[in-house]
Image 1 (cartoon, helix red, strand yellow):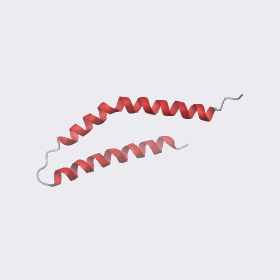
Image 2: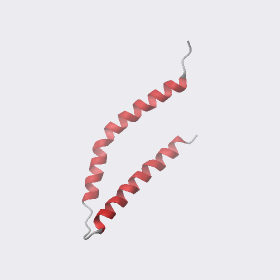
Image 3: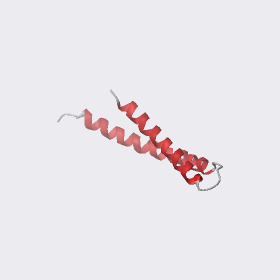
Image 4: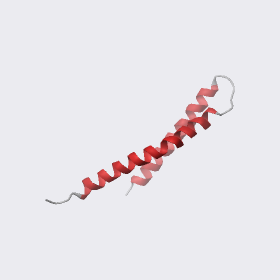
Length: 70
């Protein structure tokens, strides 16, 4: 029986992803709290929160794509 290193690497990556996600929950919570402290007035406040959150999501996707390139 041969060890399939691709499968082993995938399992290690999934485990690492779960570990990093568990450690990142307080960080994400702090970021959301900081977004809540954006001092704007009127109906544009919610829009600015969504813009900041979208910027954070796009940054995460770009970093993941850059790291996954061979």
